[in-house]
Length: 350
Image (cartoon, rainbow, N blue to C red; front, side, top):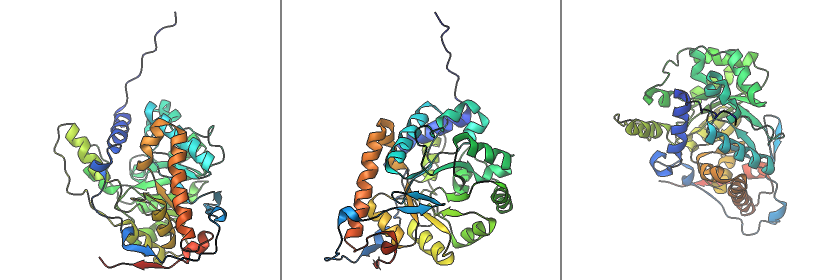
């Protein structure tokens, strides 16, 4: 009889990632109570669109790769067994739908190589635009081009996300809080890395000033990740409460609304590729985001429950959102995404 395999205990980083996933399943407790700002807009309905819904083209090109729909499955998780299931179900769905996907922060697998399997999905999704992911702040804690290349090679990624999460790190008990000099270090990664770099906030928004500095550093795309969706300050407050520590909720609604970040950054940087995320919950949200200047839109937390069940459930969920996007386009007379970008939006007073 073969010896019984003893399961290795989770590292502190793996345990934290596991807690993050579990807390994000409780949507109400970790979502900002404030709006994304997208609800302030409405399209002008076209009663005579002269289009066939079945012929509407929602394909997009992002970072040089064609997507069947302008959707990125946001970076969420990785590092432990359940996260592997989530990532593989998401990847299989992304392959079937022809959309993009980012994985969660790979720092956990840089520290613990055995965790790499929880991020590896290329066998299920050989054709998708796949983005690896590290926290930009780690560039101040011993990480550099070597670790960035390892993250990309680990999953066969087409690009690297460097996520910016100053607020989350500041309120997290174990947070890395030195963000000094990161602009120059991001620029060095952009110069040396063989794949494009994407800068991403995690739910507090990208300002014009930050976006301009990131473009100068060499990033090829920016995910504005505005306020209105998952609040990582709220997630960390929930973690603290579970650990019997004071739950600091002061910053739950901190940040730039998704709409404001998207519109202002697009006006300032008309040519950079932009991802709209932060509270994107429907095909109408995606349509509005594209009309306001996004190239594609991203969401993650709403997919968690489906991803824990099966790839088919993820396909069903995202398929419904793509249908909503097409219906929105039909009702404004937009046959494709370039036409949608010209569709008039009315901004309503509060």
